[in-house]
Each structure stands twice: as C-alpha cells, then as structure tokens.
Image (cartoon, rainbow, N blue to C red; front, top):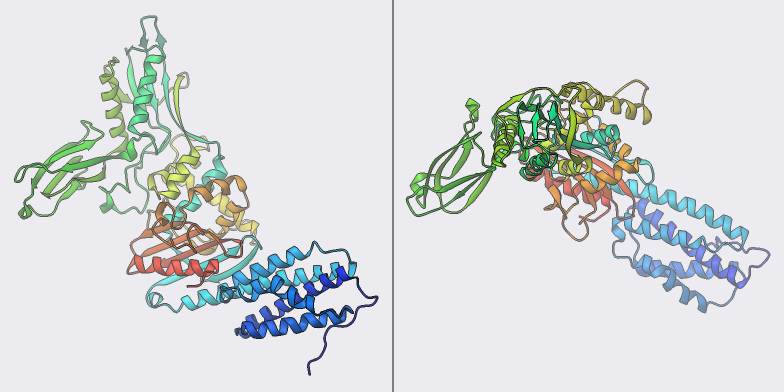
Length: 588
C-alpha cells in the first residue's frame, strides 16, 4: 500500500481553498512525471498517468478534509488531460512550455497565504526544471547530430544561447577559428548600426563653385561627390541630373568633376579571388557606382543560323559587345556570356548556340569610370552644356545644391536579406569614414570593428582590454582571410538583441526560413516556417548559418553554426537545418 505523502492542513481550508489546493497538487504531480521522464528518458502510458493523477488528487481532497470525490473526476480532465494527451510530448520543449504556462495561470489563486507561498515555490522550481529540461533536450539532440556522416570529413562549430533565460544552451568547438563566409555581414551590419546610428544615410551630392549668372550659365565647376551608395541605380542618376536645371543651371563653363575621395582607390578586398572578376557578386567597388557596377546582358534568339540579338543595360560607350552567337545551331556549342577580364577589358563576349532568351549580369572595370561615363553621356543628352570632364576633390568653399540620400536601413536589408557583397562593403567603408579622415580604408574599418569586439569581450565576462582571437579584412566575407569563432559571433548576436534599435532592424533584414531571402527555399515546413531568422554563408568548402531562432517554448535563441571543409554545400545545409529543428525543439 502506498504512503500518503499529503498531510492534513490545520485549520481546515474553505471549499475554494481546497479546490485551489487540489489544482496545486495536480500541477506538482505533472512536474514529478516530467522530472521522471527527463531523468530516466522513459515515458509512462497515458492510462497509467491518469490513474496516478486521480489517486493523488483524491489524497489532496482527503488532506483538505473534503469527502466529495465526484469533483475530482470532473476536474482532472479539465486541468490535466491536455497535458497528458499532448501529442508532442516527446519533444520535451513543448510540454515544458505548456506546464510553465499552466503554473503561471495558477498564480491568480492567491487568497490563502500558505497556498500563495507554496505556489510561488512551485513556480520557481518549475521554471528551473523547464530550463534544465530544455537545455538537456537541445544538448542531447544536437549531440546525436554530431554523429552524422557529414562530419567524418567536415568540421562543425556550434553555439546556442537562450536570450530569454540569459543562459548558454549548447557549445561545440565554439572557440575554433573558422572562415565565416557571408555571416561576416552580421558583424559588419551590427558594427555599422552601432557606430553610425539607425538614422544614418549614404549620400550622393552635387556641389558647385563660381558664379551662377542670370543667363543660367555657371561660371565655375559642378562636383559629383560619391558617398558609396551601393544601391544607386540608373533611375537615381536620371533624377539627380534632372535636379540640375531646377537650380537654374543650363550650361557650365568650367568642369564637371567626379569626386571619389571618400575612400581609397582599392577596388577589391584583401583575399578576394581574382578569377571571380566577371561575376556580379564581386564588383569593383567605388564611392561612385551605378547598378552595382554591373551591366545586364540579354541574349534573344532570332532566325535559325543567324546571330542572336544582344543588348546591355544600362547602355553606355564604356563597354563594347563582341557577338559570336548562332541561333538554333547545336554545333555552335553552349551559350557563353563573359567579359575579357584577364586583360582588364570591358569587351563583352557572347558566343555559342542560342535557343531561348537568356540574361546574365557582369561586373565592369572599373565602377567609378562606368558611373562617370554614364553621367556625362546622360547629362549632355538632357540638353545641358559642358565641355570638360575630369576627376578631382571638392574644395571647402563649394556649395551644396542637391543631395540624394539612402537610408542605412535599406542597405542593411540588402546586405543581409540578399547577401549583397557590395552593400556590406559600403557599410564597412562608411564605418571607417565616420572617423572624418579622407580616403577611408579597409584598415580604418577594421579598427572600428575591433573596437566593438573589445567592448563585447570585456562585457561578457572576459578580461578587460582583451579581444577575441579573430581576423577581419573585409565587410562582406568574400575574403578567404577572414577568421572568427562561433563564440565571438554569438556574442555579437547577443549584443544586437539587447539593443532594440539594432535588433529591430536586423531581425527584419535577416532572411526568414521558408519565407524570403537566402532562406526562402529552406525549412519551409509548417513547423519551421519563419522560426529561423538568420544569415547564410557559402564559399568553396564553407557553409555557415547564424542568427536567431524562435523555439517552440516561446524563447528567443541566438545561434551560430559553422561548417568547414565541406565537399558538398547542400549536405551541410541539410545538416544545419536538422540542427535548427533541434534548437527549436521540433522533432526531426
């Protein structure tokens, strides 16, 4: 015969207090069952659970000097059945969340001081048990994934932090230095928002010198000052040129001057691959750029045996087209669209068989020249007069007459959602330019980034004045020279989360699983759709994922996953998706 663990309470409780006490005992029993499951990793049958629940509830009535057992059989299904019947009980996280919510709702019954104290202690114990249980489940589930065949040859670094509970949930080789690929953009965007502020703008400006006469002729120069606006388009250029007549200028006797003094003349980051030159994802960057420094080449078939139609947008004399295509002729070979990049030429070469329309973007050498040629051609085509075009630096006495501003939020979204390398590099250089020095450089930007990392290093319990082992050389992650640990990037995510002005922006700008950006095609099932808000990273042999997860218990988690030496990136992404399910408490 079992031992009655419930002692009568004296003086006897009122009917309302007995009912409250009964609910408390039932909740306590639920936690006992969960504790047994967590420790023994076994699950009792629902039938057996009900039997013991009713027995314990009956004893609670006896403890309260109440003899009516009918109420027990009515209360149990209402208060407990949704717990013992919960289909996702095996996931652990869901059941803990459910019971946690159940206990919170009990706190409204606080008429009796003994019951109030008892329930407060029970709630505290329950919360602790929930946290321990969640951590154990996450650790166990991810540890199982560490036995995946992928990791026989590839490496993995994983770090998970519960931002809601302010507790580390999981760490595996989190201090190992890895090539981050595009998750470098997380560090870049957080640094930029922290350094520049959320209202910062990237500006392209027009200045004039000299005298503007009543005849609308400027006796002086017009300066086009670049502000490294990575999102500047052909339409923006047309609007900028259209403002010139509105300020009363029809012609210029001096020069139209392109000012690119904001940044140094380096057009690639250190460690970028030279053979990626014609690719649109690796443009030649400059403070003056248009359409990402690229042209879009469109090839359209005509009649069989004839050459295809080849057009480029935006149209410009800065490049030439070499068309060697043949329509509907397989002997011509596969269609190939490239640029003579090995010789630094802007000769666009199109060759091969054309069966259907096809488009491809190519970078041009160099971006500032591409911008300036387009600007002068469109300026003259608009009917405005000028005879001299050159490069120079705006003098201090020049007067601002027009400005086109790009909110930093737009650039951050492009860098994170679309993983745009140029957008990230623009932010990188703007953090350097904030120092006020001319010709901002990557070295200056690294100093700003390191300053933030030093702050984080000491803020999160490390020695003051120290810094994480790492190496930063660019803002986009294109460089093979970048190195960081999962631990370091996790702390960057923690910092962003605890600064709402930053978190509100990047949490919207990051790709959402199964919804948009570079995660649109991943984790799109109903249970995972939108739960992961993270930046992807890919380069040869490297696949990374870092951001935030919305767990099934309602907690917000920060996580970093870095795979190195991966033979097939698709295999790494599949493995990362499984880790994300484990983090969120969703069964595989």
